Image 1: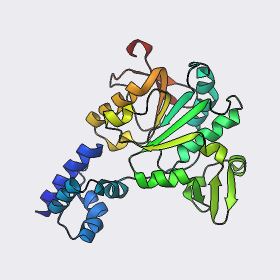
Image 2: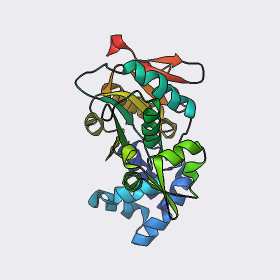
Image 3: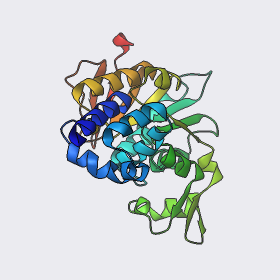
Image 4: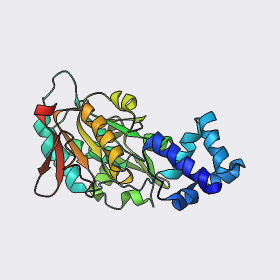
Length: 271
């Protein structure tokens, strides 16, 4: 009966956020057993509890999601975006700022790194670039908004020393991101498989959705990419993780190979 309850829970999770556990029930049990026991429920009962108490999804998502990230992660992509793509897009829209969407921002290292590198270019006035940072995990979003990181954090393993000194204030026990960087980033909750929630982001010029698709099956991957495609301006750019590919999915993107990395461009004729 417990296994049947786990199967049902895996189905609910798949429907809610697209993460597939149907073939990883032991892993699912390892992640959730303590919480289910705390509530004094069986897995069948927990499935009912999720339906009756929607706020429990916030608790469950924290248990399920992996939020391993750090500043300056996959630097070739970041440099390509900030030094080459953004200057090329500058002035594309006179009626709004350039907009970048960090679609799975976790605790904020990716969007804050983008903000730092944009300032480092010296090519953009304050307010001319907006970064929207989203995640399905509300707990990590709160940490990201605070912009404070412990000085022994894994987050600083790759950040150049000059950026750390320039854009963080050293405090007892950690570092606080400076207001000039925080002001460039807006954080909000988004479930990437939701067409309604992703639509609220509005039109963007660049999307970073790195190391997310590896948790989805092909059907969910296509669903997420279609949502991203709708938000991306014609000729806009999509960055995925190095282990992720949508080249053969015919979803309206063309692969772009640069000297040190690759990414995708929304095809104008399919915009």
